[in-house]
Length: 158
Image (cartoon, rainbow, N blue to C red; front, side, top):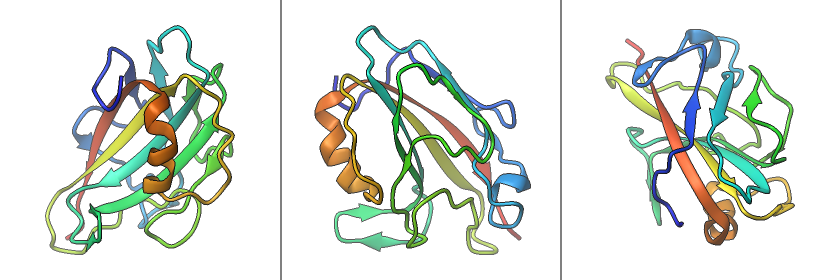
């Protein structure tokens, strides 16, 4: 499958596609992860992962761009939704230089940023250790991605 969009769908009861992310889920609010739900995972799914990345962030480092807000993996195949501030799964290392979710907090006056929340269905239970960066996780996961899709939310600061 590789990295191609699939029929699997990702949604949130708190914001729609390209809709504004409520302040509660940002660095200006409670800074907790938003609730998410997905459906349509294919047969053979053995686990899920969630990533959140802001490609609009003015950060370029060797081999990547943008800002990683969330790396969450080792989610079991029977999980199809996450509540706000979830403690499920294993957290990876973000560009906040810590593990766990970090909400949108673009530079003031930088315009609208787009936050890509990705769900990936995997054909293996990776049992990946805590603290992987997005790049490290994707290196392990890519051969096992059998479906994926995204929900894009927006946020801006004056």
